[in-house]
Amino acid sequence: MVGHPLGAIGRSFLEMVREGFRMVGFLYVIFSVAWQHRKDGRKVIFQNVISQIYFTGVQSMPLVFVIALLLGGLLIIQSAEYLTSVGEEFFGTLVNVIIIRELGSLLTAIIVLLRSGAAVATEMGYMAVLKETKGIEMMGINPVHYLAVPRMIGISISMICLFVCFSIISILGGMLLTWMITNIEMTNLIKELSQSIGAIDLFVGMTKSLFFGIFVSLVSLYHGFNAAGALTSIPPRVSRAMVEGLILCISFSAMISALFYL
Amino acid sequence: MDSDNNSRILHDISMEVKAGEKHFILARPYSPLVHLLRICATIYPPTSGTVKIFGRVTNEMSFRDLLLIKRTIGFVERVSSLISNKSLLENITLGLRYHNNISINEAYRHAHTFLLHFDLLENINDRPARIPPEKLRMALFCRELVLAPKLMILEKPSYGLSRDELEFLMEAILSYQAKSNCGLIISDDDADFFTRNYGFSVYKLIDGYLSS
Image 1 (cartoon, rainbow over the protein chains, first blue to last red):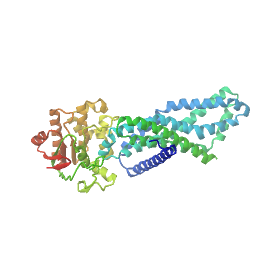
Image 2: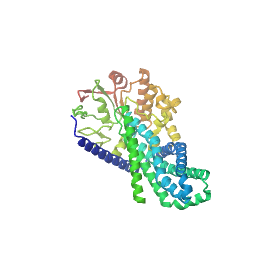
Image 3: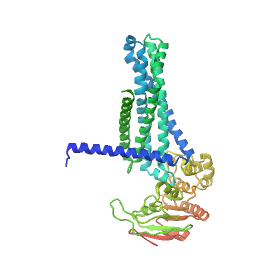
Protein backbone atom coordinates (compact mmCIF):
# COMPACT_ATOMS: atom_id res chain seq x y z
CA MET A 1 0.00 0.00 0.00
CA VAL A 2 1.30 3.42 -0.95
CA GLY A 3 1.02 5.97 1.84
CA HIS A 4 0.10 9.60 1.46
CA PRO A 5 3.11 11.65 0.22
CA LEU A 6 2.66 14.16 3.03
CA GLY A 7 2.69 11.31 5.53
CA ALA A 8 5.93 10.01 4.03
CA ILE A 9 7.52 13.45 4.30
CA GLY A 10 6.34 13.74 7.90
CA ARG A 11 7.70 10.32 8.78
CA SER A 12 11.08 11.08 7.22
CA PHE A 13 11.19 14.38 9.07
CA LEU A 14 10.37 12.69 12.38
CA GLU A 15 13.02 10.04 11.71
CA MET A 16 15.52 12.82 10.98
CA VAL A 17 14.64 14.51 14.28
CA ARG A 18 14.97 11.21 16.15
CA GLU A 19 18.35 10.56 14.51
CA GLY A 20 19.41 14.07 15.55
CA PHE A 21 18.46 13.37 19.15
CA ARG A 22 20.29 10.04 19.10
CA MET A 23 23.39 11.81 17.80
CA VAL A 24 23.18 14.42 20.55
CA GLY A 25 22.83 11.53 23.02
CA PHE A 26 25.93 9.90 21.57
CA LEU A 27 27.84 13.18 21.89
CA TYR A 28 26.79 13.33 25.54
CA VAL A 29 28.03 9.75 26.01
CA ILE A 30 31.42 10.62 24.48
CA PHE A 31 31.84 13.66 26.75
CA SER A 32 30.68 11.86 29.89
CA VAL A 33 32.88 8.82 29.17
CA ALA A 34 35.85 11.13 28.55
CA TRP A 35 35.25 12.72 31.95
CA GLN A 36 34.56 9.48 33.85
CA HIS A 37 37.63 7.71 32.47
CA ARG A 38 39.90 10.76 32.45
CA LYS A 39 42.51 8.96 34.57
CA ASP A 40 42.33 5.59 32.78
CA GLY A 41 44.84 4.38 30.22
CA ARG A 42 46.37 7.79 29.64
CA LYS A 43 49.36 6.50 27.68
CA VAL A 44 47.21 4.43 25.33
CA ILE A 45 44.70 7.24 24.82
CA PHE A 46 47.46 9.82 24.27
CA GLN A 47 49.06 7.55 21.68
CA ASN A 48 45.70 7.21 19.91
CA VAL A 49 45.23 10.99 19.91
CA ILE A 50 48.70 11.46 18.38
CA SER A 51 47.98 8.80 15.73
CA GLN A 52 44.73 10.54 14.85
CA ILE A 53 46.44 13.95 14.62
CA TYR A 54 49.10 12.41 12.39
CA PHE A 55 46.50 10.86 10.11
CA THR A 56 44.09 13.80 9.99
CA GLY A 57 46.40 16.76 10.46
CA VAL A 58 49.80 15.82 9.08
CA GLN A 59 48.85 13.47 6.24
CA SER A 60 46.13 15.88 5.00
CA MET A 61 48.59 18.74 4.69
CA PRO A 62 49.57 18.25 1.01
CA LEU A 63 45.90 18.21 0.03
CA VAL A 64 45.13 21.26 2.16
CA PHE A 65 48.18 23.02 0.72
CA VAL A 66 47.08 22.49 -2.88
CA ILE A 67 43.44 23.46 -2.28
CA ALA A 68 44.39 26.53 -0.24
CA LEU A 69 46.80 27.70 -2.90
CA LEU A 70 44.19 27.14 -5.62
CA LEU A 71 41.52 28.96 -3.63
CA GLY A 72 43.80 31.91 -2.95
CA GLY A 73 44.73 32.08 -6.61
CA LEU A 74 41.14 31.63 -7.80
CA LEU A 75 39.98 34.38 -5.53
CA ILE A 76 42.50 36.81 -6.97
CA ILE A 77 41.99 35.80 -10.59
CA GLN A 78 38.24 36.36 -10.21
CA SER A 79 38.64 39.68 -8.48
CA ALA A 80 41.79 41.02 -10.26
CA GLU A 81 39.72 43.24 -12.51
CA TYR A 82 37.99 44.86 -9.53
CA LEU A 83 41.18 45.08 -7.48
CA THR A 84 42.84 47.29 -10.08
CA SER A 85 39.79 49.51 -10.46
CA VAL A 86 38.66 49.65 -6.82
CA GLY A 87 42.14 49.60 -5.31
CA GLU A 88 44.13 47.59 -2.80
CA GLU A 89 41.90 48.46 0.17
CA PHE A 90 39.46 45.91 -1.24
CA PHE A 91 42.03 43.10 -0.97
CA GLY A 92 42.08 42.83 2.81
CA THR A 93 38.30 42.73 3.13
CA LEU A 94 38.00 40.18 0.33
CA VAL A 95 40.55 37.85 1.87
CA ASN A 96 39.08 38.28 5.33
CA VAL A 97 35.46 37.65 4.31
CA ILE A 98 36.10 34.77 1.95
CA ILE A 99 39.05 32.94 3.50
CA ILE A 100 39.13 33.66 7.23
CA ARG A 101 35.45 34.02 7.95
CA GLU A 102 33.86 31.57 5.54
CA LEU A 103 35.62 29.25 3.14
CA GLY A 104 38.81 28.53 5.09
CA SER A 105 37.16 26.62 7.90
CA LEU A 106 34.41 25.17 5.73
CA LEU A 107 36.71 23.82 3.03
CA THR A 108 39.05 22.42 5.67
CA ALA A 109 36.05 20.70 7.28
CA ILE A 110 35.00 19.22 3.93
CA ILE A 111 38.53 17.93 3.26
CA VAL A 112 38.69 16.34 6.73
CA LEU A 113 35.17 14.94 6.41
CA LEU A 114 35.89 13.28 3.08
CA ARG A 115 39.29 11.99 4.09
CA SER A 116 39.37 11.26 7.82
CA GLY A 117 35.62 11.16 8.48
CA ALA A 118 35.08 8.47 5.86
CA ALA A 119 38.08 6.51 7.20
CA VAL A 120 36.87 6.72 10.80
CA ALA A 121 33.29 5.71 9.90
CA THR A 122 34.56 2.73 7.89
CA GLU A 123 37.02 1.65 10.55
CA MET A 124 34.47 1.89 13.35
CA GLY A 125 31.81 0.14 11.25
CA TYR A 126 34.23 -2.68 10.49
CA MET A 127 35.14 -3.03 14.16
CA ALA A 128 31.49 -3.01 15.24
CA VAL A 129 30.41 -5.60 12.67
CA LEU A 130 33.35 -7.90 13.39
CA LYS A 131 32.68 -7.60 17.15
CA GLU A 132 36.13 -6.14 17.77
CA THR A 133 34.51 -3.49 19.97
CA LYS A 134 33.03 -6.31 22.11
CA GLY A 135 36.53 -7.77 22.41
CA ILE A 136 37.79 -4.41 23.69
CA GLU A 137 34.88 -4.26 26.14
CA MET A 138 35.68 -7.76 27.42
CA MET A 139 39.16 -6.52 28.37
CA GLY A 140 37.42 -4.08 30.71
CA ILE A 141 37.99 -1.14 28.38
CA ASN A 142 35.13 1.15 27.44
CA PRO A 143 35.17 1.13 23.60
CA VAL A 144 33.90 4.71 23.52
CA HIS A 145 36.86 5.80 25.66
CA TYR A 146 39.43 3.84 23.68
CA LEU A 147 38.07 4.50 20.18
CA ALA A 148 35.80 7.54 20.11
CA VAL A 149 37.36 9.98 22.58
CA PRO A 150 40.88 10.08 21.03
CA ARG A 151 39.44 10.35 17.54
CA MET A 152 37.23 13.27 18.49
CA ILE A 153 40.11 15.07 20.25
CA GLY A 154 42.54 14.33 17.41
CA ILE A 155 40.21 15.43 14.63
CA SER A 156 39.21 18.64 16.49
CA ILE A 157 42.83 19.65 17.15
CA SER A 158 43.79 18.82 13.56
CA MET A 159 40.87 20.80 12.19
CA ILE A 160 41.97 23.98 14.00
CA CYS A 161 45.60 23.54 12.88
CA LEU A 162 44.57 22.82 9.31
CA PHE A 163 42.35 25.92 9.26
CA VAL A 164 45.30 28.07 10.36
CA CYS A 165 47.57 26.50 7.72
CA PHE A 166 44.85 26.77 5.06
CA SER A 167 44.34 30.47 5.80
CA ILE A 168 48.07 31.27 5.77
CA ILE A 169 48.72 29.38 2.54
CA SER A 170 45.74 30.81 0.66
CA ILE A 171 46.52 34.36 1.82
CA LEU A 172 50.18 34.04 0.85
CA GLY A 173 49.23 32.45 -2.45
CA GLY A 174 46.66 35.15 -3.12
CA MET A 175 49.11 37.92 -2.24
CA LEU A 176 51.77 36.48 -4.47
CA LEU A 177 49.39 36.19 -7.40
CA THR A 178 48.00 39.70 -6.85
CA TRP A 179 51.51 41.09 -6.79
CA MET A 180 52.31 39.20 -9.99
CA ILE A 181 49.23 40.05 -12.07
CA THR A 182 48.33 43.54 -10.80
CA ASN A 183 50.40 46.63 -10.20
CA ILE A 184 49.45 46.83 -6.52
CA GLU A 185 52.41 47.14 -4.15
CA MET A 186 53.13 44.19 -1.84
CA THR A 187 53.66 46.45 1.17
CA ASN A 188 50.20 47.94 0.61
CA LEU A 189 48.68 44.48 0.46
CA ILE A 190 50.27 43.49 3.77
CA LYS A 191 49.15 46.76 5.34
CA GLU A 192 45.59 46.30 4.07
CA LEU A 193 45.50 42.73 5.26
CA SER A 194 46.73 43.55 8.76
CA GLN A 195 44.13 46.30 9.04
CA SER A 196 41.14 44.26 7.90
CA ILE A 197 41.74 40.98 9.75
CA GLY A 198 40.74 41.36 13.37
CA ALA A 199 41.11 39.05 16.36
CA ILE A 200 37.37 38.35 16.28
CA ASP A 201 37.66 36.99 12.73
CA LEU A 202 40.40 34.59 13.73
CA PHE A 203 38.48 33.64 16.87
CA VAL A 204 35.32 32.91 14.88
CA GLY A 205 37.28 30.92 12.29
CA MET A 206 38.99 28.81 14.94
CA THR A 207 35.78 28.31 16.91
CA LYS A 208 34.04 27.19 13.75
CA SER A 209 36.88 24.75 13.07
CA LEU A 210 36.64 23.33 16.58
CA PHE A 211 32.92 22.68 16.14
CA PHE A 212 33.45 21.30 12.65
CA GLY A 213 35.96 18.89 14.17
CA ILE A 214 33.40 17.77 16.73
CA PHE A 215 30.66 17.40 14.09
CA VAL A 216 32.82 15.50 11.60
CA SER A 217 34.06 13.07 14.24
CA LEU A 218 30.59 12.76 15.79
CA VAL A 219 28.75 11.75 12.61
CA SER A 220 31.56 9.43 11.56
CA LEU A 221 31.78 7.73 14.95
CA TYR A 222 28.01 7.57 15.39
CA HIS A 223 27.41 5.84 12.07
CA GLY A 224 30.48 3.62 12.49
CA PHE A 225 29.49 2.45 15.97
CA ASN A 226 25.92 1.80 14.82
CA ALA A 227 26.84 -0.41 11.89
CA ALA A 228 25.54 -3.90 12.60
CA GLY A 229 24.92 -7.24 10.96
CA ALA A 230 26.89 -7.65 7.76
CA LEU A 231 29.89 -5.86 6.28
CA THR A 232 27.56 -4.60 3.54
CA SER A 233 25.87 -2.35 6.08
CA ILE A 234 29.04 -0.24 6.34
CA PRO A 235 29.07 1.62 2.95
CA PRO A 236 25.51 3.04 3.38
CA ARG A 237 26.47 4.12 6.91
CA VAL A 238 29.61 5.87 5.62
CA SER A 239 27.61 7.56 2.88
CA ARG A 240 25.04 8.81 5.44
CA ALA A 241 27.84 10.06 7.68
CA MET A 242 29.30 12.08 4.81
CA VAL A 243 25.97 13.64 3.81
CA GLU A 244 24.95 14.44 7.38
CA GLY A 245 28.41 15.80 8.16
CA LEU A 246 28.26 18.10 5.16
CA ILE A 247 24.78 19.38 6.05
CA LEU A 248 25.79 19.91 9.69
CA CYS A 249 28.94 21.85 8.79
CA ILE A 250 27.26 24.12 6.22
CA SER A 251 24.28 24.82 8.50
CA PHE A 252 26.54 25.59 11.44
CA SER A 253 28.76 27.85 9.32
CA ALA A 254 25.72 29.82 8.13
CA MET A 255 24.35 30.05 11.67
CA ILE A 256 27.63 31.34 13.13
CA SER A 257 28.11 33.86 10.32
CA ALA A 258 24.58 35.15 10.85
CA LEU A 259 25.17 35.35 14.60
CA PHE A 260 28.47 37.25 14.40
CA TYR A 261 28.20 39.40 11.30
CA LEU A 262 24.53 40.22 10.70
CA MET B 1 16.89 -15.32 28.24
CA ASP B 2 14.62 -14.42 25.31
CA SER B 3 15.53 -14.62 21.64
CA ASP B 4 14.87 -11.91 19.06
CA ASN B 5 11.30 -13.12 18.46
CA ASN B 6 10.61 -13.14 22.23
CA SER B 7 10.46 -16.93 22.60
CA ARG B 8 12.26 -18.14 25.70
CA ILE B 9 15.47 -19.99 24.82
CA LEU B 10 17.06 -20.58 28.23
CA HIS B 11 15.04 -21.68 31.26
CA ASP B 12 15.71 -21.88 34.99
CA ILE B 13 19.47 -21.83 34.65
CA SER B 14 21.25 -22.29 37.93
CA MET B 15 25.00 -22.64 37.88
CA GLU B 16 27.73 -21.83 40.33
CA VAL B 17 31.44 -21.69 39.60
CA LYS B 18 33.77 -21.48 42.59
CA ALA B 19 37.43 -20.55 42.51
CA GLY B 20 39.53 -23.38 41.11
CA GLU B 21 36.55 -25.31 39.71
CA LYS B 22 36.41 -26.64 36.16
CA HIS B 23 33.09 -27.01 34.39
CA PHE B 24 32.27 -28.33 30.98
CA ILE B 25 29.00 -27.53 29.22
CA LEU B 26 27.84 -30.04 26.68
CA ALA B 27 25.24 -28.83 24.21
CA ARG B 28 23.65 -29.97 20.98
CA PRO B 29 24.28 -28.02 17.76
CA TYR B 30 21.99 -24.98 17.39
CA SER B 31 21.36 -24.85 21.13
CA PRO B 32 21.51 -21.45 22.86
CA LEU B 33 24.93 -22.28 24.29
CA VAL B 34 26.58 -19.09 23.01
CA HIS B 35 23.85 -17.06 24.71
CA LEU B 36 24.48 -18.86 27.97
CA LEU B 37 28.23 -18.28 27.77
CA ARG B 38 27.71 -14.63 26.91
CA ILE B 39 25.39 -14.22 29.89
CA CYS B 40 28.08 -15.78 32.10
CA ALA B 41 30.61 -13.37 30.58
CA THR B 42 28.26 -10.41 31.29
CA ILE B 43 27.99 -9.55 27.60
CA TYR B 44 24.21 -10.17 27.60
CA PRO B 45 22.06 -9.47 30.64
CA PRO B 46 19.48 -12.17 31.44
CA THR B 47 15.84 -11.21 30.84
CA SER B 48 15.01 -12.50 34.31
CA GLY B 49 17.01 -13.75 37.27
CA THR B 50 20.48 -12.64 38.27
CA VAL B 51 24.09 -13.22 37.41
CA LYS B 52 26.38 -12.93 40.40
CA ILE B 53 30.12 -12.64 39.91
CA PHE B 54 32.38 -12.50 42.97
CA GLY B 55 29.21 -12.11 45.05
CA ARG B 56 28.00 -9.05 43.16
CA VAL B 57 24.85 -8.94 41.06
CA THR B 58 25.94 -7.77 37.64
CA ASN B 59 22.46 -6.91 36.31
CA GLU B 60 22.19 -3.91 38.60
CA MET B 61 25.69 -2.57 38.02
CA SER B 62 26.54 0.56 36.11
CA PHE B 63 28.45 0.00 32.87
CA ARG B 64 31.58 1.35 34.51
CA ASP B 65 31.41 -1.14 37.39
CA LEU B 66 30.61 -3.88 34.93
CA LEU B 67 33.81 -3.09 33.05
CA LEU B 68 35.77 -3.80 36.24
CA ILE B 69 34.10 -7.21 36.39
CA LYS B 70 34.66 -7.88 32.69
CA ARG B 71 38.34 -7.19 33.21
CA THR B 72 38.55 -10.20 35.51
CA ILE B 73 36.80 -12.52 33.04
CA GLY B 74 38.78 -14.12 30.24
CA PHE B 75 36.24 -14.87 27.53
CA VAL B 76 37.41 -16.49 24.31
CA GLU B 77 34.85 -17.01 21.60
CA ARG B 78 35.19 -19.11 18.51
CA VAL B 79 35.56 -16.07 16.26
CA SER B 80 38.54 -13.76 16.49
CA SER B 81 37.94 -10.43 18.16
CA LEU B 82 41.47 -9.12 17.69
CA ILE B 83 41.66 -5.58 16.34
CA SER B 84 42.44 -5.88 12.62
CA ASN B 85 44.53 -2.74 12.23
CA LYS B 86 46.77 -3.33 15.25
CA SER B 87 49.76 -5.62 15.44
CA LEU B 88 49.61 -8.83 17.44
CA LEU B 89 51.71 -7.29 20.21
CA GLU B 90 49.46 -4.24 20.40
CA ASN B 91 46.44 -6.53 20.57
CA ILE B 92 47.82 -8.83 23.25
CA THR B 93 49.15 -6.04 25.44
CA LEU B 94 46.25 -3.61 25.01
CA GLY B 95 44.55 -4.52 28.29
CA LEU B 96 47.85 -4.44 30.19
CA ARG B 97 48.83 -1.06 28.75
CA TYR B 98 45.43 0.47 29.34
CA HIS B 99 44.83 -0.75 32.89
CA ASN B 100 48.39 -0.37 34.19
CA ASN B 101 49.18 2.79 32.18
CA ILE B 102 52.45 1.36 30.92
CA SER B 103 54.33 1.65 27.63
CA ILE B 104 54.29 -1.07 25.01
CA ASN B 105 57.87 -2.06 25.93
CA GLU B 106 56.97 -2.58 29.57
CA ALA B 107 53.84 -4.49 28.54
CA TYR B 108 55.96 -6.63 26.22
CA ARG B 109 58.20 -7.59 29.16
CA HIS B 110 55.11 -8.55 31.18
CA ALA B 111 53.64 -10.63 28.35
CA HIS B 112 56.93 -12.14 27.21
CA THR B 113 56.49 -15.47 29.03
CA PHE B 114 53.10 -16.09 27.43
CA LEU B 115 54.27 -14.93 24.00
CA LEU B 116 57.21 -17.30 24.22
CA HIS B 117 55.07 -20.15 25.51
CA PHE B 118 52.53 -19.80 22.70
CA ASP B 119 55.30 -19.37 20.11
CA LEU B 120 54.03 -15.96 19.04
CA LEU B 121 57.26 -13.98 19.27
CA GLU B 122 58.00 -14.13 15.56
CA ASN B 123 54.55 -12.74 14.72
CA ILE B 124 54.30 -9.88 17.21
CA ASN B 125 54.64 -7.19 14.56
CA ASP B 126 52.15 -8.76 12.14
CA ARG B 127 48.53 -7.71 11.78
CA PRO B 128 45.96 -10.47 12.52
CA ALA B 129 45.18 -10.96 8.81
CA ARG B 130 48.76 -12.09 8.18
CA ILE B 131 48.90 -14.63 10.99
CA PRO B 132 48.09 -18.34 10.47
CA PRO B 133 44.66 -19.32 11.93
CA GLU B 134 46.04 -21.65 14.62
CA LYS B 135 48.40 -18.92 15.88
CA LEU B 136 45.54 -16.44 15.80
CA ARG B 137 43.57 -18.78 18.07
CA MET B 138 46.53 -19.05 20.43
CA ALA B 139 46.86 -15.26 20.41
CA LEU B 140 43.25 -14.95 21.62
CA PHE B 141 43.98 -17.18 24.61
CA CYS B 142 47.28 -15.41 25.21
CA ARG B 143 45.54 -12.01 25.25
CA GLU B 144 43.19 -13.21 28.00
CA LEU B 145 45.89 -14.93 30.05
CA VAL B 146 48.16 -11.86 30.23
CA LEU B 147 45.31 -10.03 31.97
CA ALA B 148 45.33 -12.66 34.76
CA PRO B 149 41.58 -13.43 34.75
CA LYS B 150 39.79 -14.91 37.78
CA LEU B 151 37.23 -16.67 35.62
CA MET B 152 37.87 -18.11 32.17
CA ILE B 153 35.06 -18.91 29.75
CA LEU B 154 36.11 -20.67 26.58
CA GLU B 155 33.77 -21.37 23.69
CA LYS B 156 34.94 -24.40 21.75
CA PRO B 157 38.69 -24.13 22.38
CA SER B 158 39.31 -27.01 19.94
CA TYR B 159 38.09 -24.85 17.02
CA GLY B 160 40.82 -24.53 14.38
CA LEU B 161 43.33 -26.53 16.45
CA SER B 162 44.74 -30.02 16.01
CA ARG B 163 44.54 -32.44 18.93
CA ASP B 164 48.20 -31.78 19.82
CA GLU B 165 47.64 -28.02 19.75
CA LEU B 166 44.53 -28.41 21.90
CA GLU B 167 46.45 -30.49 24.45
CA PHE B 168 49.21 -27.88 24.48
CA LEU B 169 46.64 -25.12 25.00
CA MET B 170 44.85 -26.99 27.78
CA GLU B 171 48.15 -27.57 29.56
CA ALA B 172 48.86 -23.84 29.47
CA ILE B 173 45.39 -22.94 30.68
CA LEU B 174 45.31 -25.55 33.44
CA SER B 175 48.78 -24.57 34.55
CA TYR B 176 47.59 -20.96 34.85
CA GLN B 177 44.43 -22.15 36.62
CA ALA B 178 46.44 -24.13 39.13
CA LYS B 179 48.59 -21.10 39.92
CA SER B 180 45.82 -18.50 40.02
CA ASN B 181 42.97 -20.71 41.30
CA CYS B 182 40.63 -19.22 38.70
CA GLY B 183 37.28 -20.72 37.73
CA LEU B 184 36.97 -22.33 34.32
CA ILE B 185 33.96 -22.91 32.06
CA ILE B 186 34.48 -24.65 28.75
CA SER B 187 32.07 -25.75 26.06
CA ASP B 188 33.13 -28.01 23.24
CA ASP B 189 32.03 -31.01 21.20
CA ASP B 190 34.19 -33.71 22.75
CA ALA B 191 33.13 -33.97 26.40
CA ASP B 192 35.10 -37.19 26.92
CA PHE B 193 38.39 -35.51 26.06
CA PHE B 194 37.91 -32.87 28.75
CA THR B 195 36.38 -35.06 31.44
CA ARG B 196 38.73 -38.02 31.02
CA ASN B 197 41.95 -36.06 30.63
CA TYR B 198 41.36 -33.03 32.79
CA GLY B 199 38.61 -33.97 35.23
CA PHE B 200 35.99 -31.40 34.26
CA SER B 201 32.53 -31.69 35.80
CA VAL B 202 29.88 -31.81 33.09
CA TYR B 203 26.70 -29.82 32.64
CA LYS B 204 24.28 -30.61 29.85
CA LEU B 205 22.27 -27.97 28.06
CA ILE B 206 19.17 -29.65 26.66
CA ASP B 207 16.18 -27.71 25.26
CA GLY B 208 17.29 -24.60 27.08
CA TYR B 209 17.56 -26.38 30.46
CA LEU B 210 20.89 -26.91 32.17
CA SER B 211 21.41 -30.05 34.21
CA SER B 212 24.48 -31.44 35.89
